[in-house]
Image (cartoon, rainbow, N blue to C red):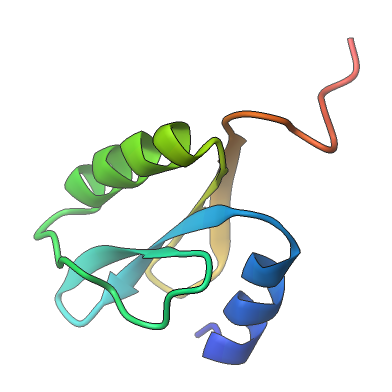
Length: 85
């Protein structure tokens, strides 16, 4: 499982939205926030809401697996590490 301290350290570097497991559901943590404002019943619902928030904030969207590890990450906006082509 991930630690809140590790998430806060990662989130302090740049704007980000983390889709994380919460009890029997899923939620989204934004940079600077310590609580999940809404719990979704499925990961897909939380991901869609997190993606919309990240796009609106031009932030990174980090999607965690049930065990808390990062499963995927997408950047919306100014990516400091763009893909090489």
